[in-house]
Image 1: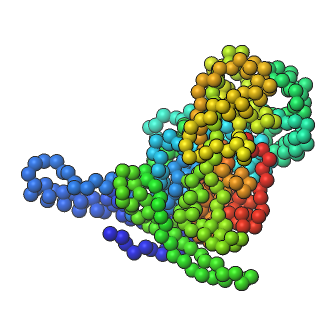
Image 2: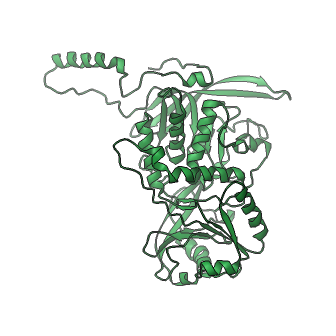
Image 3: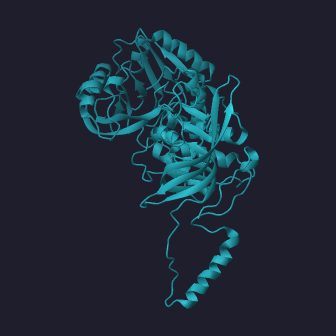
Length: 486
C-alpha cells in the first residue's frame, strides 16, 4: 500500500517539484484510463450507474510537500503565503489537517476579535502593523473570482489601556517603542481621559494610552472563512482528521562542545480520518505545527522534549491549552458608539458588541485561579466575583448591567514567556512552528503566516525578523518579555 518514503534534498529545489498522485482524485494523465475501466466494468454488470465499492474521497493524499497541522486562522495563513510566494505557481502541494471541521472549539472563532499595536516588544508591534494593513485591504489579498467581497466588519475604535501609578512609567516606555515602530498612540492624563470619555471613573488611573489609528476589532469568522475560501481556490487540500503519529529518520552528530545530538527528519504523517478506525499515511517534506492550544501534544508526537532534562533534546514546546471566559451583557445607559476596547489596570477588559448597548469582556485568571481546560464550561461566579466589580468601579453605569450570555475558548498559552513560537525546530529539522501566541494569535496571523512561508521557502525571515521567537530560546533561557498581555 505504501511507497518507499522519499528522501528529497532540502531547499527550494525540493519545493519546486510538482509531485503527482492524490488519493481520492485521479491525476490528469490517468483520467482516461479510469474512465475506460469504469466503462468495462459497467459493460459486464447489470444496471446502470457506476457505484465504487469504496469511497476514498474523504482521505488525504498519499503525498504532500507540506502538511499543516491545524486549520485555524494561523494554519490557513501559512497555507496562503506558501501558495502566494511559491515559484513557479503550482509548485508546492499543501495539505491542511484539521480535526474540528465545525470549528466549534477553535480559538479563532471563540476570540473577541481585537487587534492592536500597543505591545512592548517591537516584533509584536511590527506583526500587528502588517496584519492591520492586510485586514484593511483584505479583498486585495483574499478576493476569489465570482465570489462576493469579504466584509470583516472592522470597527476602528482603538484600544484604551489604563495604568495605575505603579504602571505609568512602564506605559510611557512602551508607547515610546510603539511610536518608534510607526504606531500612532497618544498618552492621556486622567483629566484628558475624563474629557474624551466622560463615562469613565478615573480613580486609580495615573495614565492612559490610546490607539488613534489602526486598532479596534473585527469578525474572526469572516477572516477564517475568507482565508479558507482563498486557499482552496489556490489548490490547497483539506482533510478532516487527526494527526496521530510521525515517522522519521535519525542522524547522530556531535556539537563543537562534544555533546551528542540526534537530528530527525519527518518523512510521513499518519492521519486518522473522521468516522474511521484506520489512518492514512501521508509522505511529506515539511510539517507546520499550527495546532494552537494542542501544538505541545503534536510536538511530543514528533519526539520533541523526549531527552535528558537540561539538554536541547529534552527541551519541550511549552505550549498548553488555557481556558478563557468571555461574557456578554446589556446596559442601556452604558458607553456610546465611540467606546474603544478598554483594558483596566485590574486586567478586566471590555468593548461594545453591535449597536444595541451590548458589551462583551472578561479577565484572565491568576495562576492559582486557572480553570480546568478539559471542557469549555463557563464559570459564572468568576464574572460575579472578579469581572463585574472592576467593570462597575471603572464604568459606574455598569452597576446595573444585565448578563446575557457567555462562552469559553482556548489560549495557546506559552508558559515560558507568553509570546509566539515561529520557525524551525533545531533538531526535528523539517518541523516548523506557528503557535504559542497566548491570546494575540488571531490579530497577528496574516504576518505570522508570511514569516513562516519565508522561512520555509527562503531559509530565513525576510520581511520581519522574528529570530527572538525561535524555539531555541527555551533551551537558552532567553525570554521575550511582553508586558502588554491581555
